[in-house]
Image (cartoon, rainbow, N blue to C red; front, side):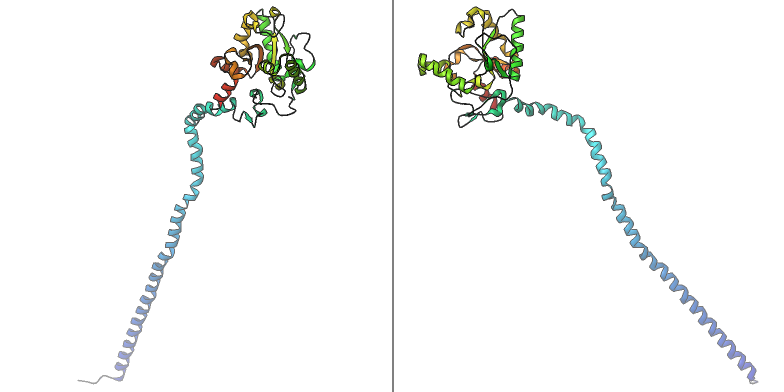
Length: 304
């Protein structure tokens, strides 16, 4: 067998080297391509936080959903308006009633509570504060007897307007009435009460006259009235006249009550006075007239 020439050996070596080089380059390219795939896979986790943030944002609408939640309550009241209206309408009367009845004590340590306004209670046990005088006294535009002058023709404004309406109503019904005494100051009551005590004794005077500070006349809410049928005197016989009967039946419609009734002399401490009118407002006067109880008892019942 002939020996290979040097040229052939060189060619064989050259081809071997070229083949190795090509194989290494091929492996290098594959190695370079694989890291590229790995980086693409590693980007997926890199995007995962974004996906996660998107989910948070998707959940974030929970806070962002609050504005709609605010809108929904705005719509819900609209849907619930009938119920919202029914509750106040049903429960409004009980809430407002306390405004119409005393919500404060009638007295404190024997002193009348002037905050009760037209419902102020004054009697033999409860006195007005020292020096009390209403600030809204006005002269009532009605007929008075000649002996009534100055402050004795005055009442608190609301009561004055009410007695004017009462007198107009009486006149329209053919009833003749005149005022005999309205407001009395503390000092005037001192003189009047002392005169009665000097005449009839204190025990007897206490049955028809109030001690100073205990007179309803000092509140500016009381007035005595009489008629020609009894000579404009303050007498119980007024009860039997058409004028007295009209007062008993109609005074409450103008906000007045006949304060001292015959049936309650022991309770009020005063004898029956068909001439003594006390203003407490139409609503309360009507209630007192219907229940037919003394003013003291009416107030106590109203507060319970």
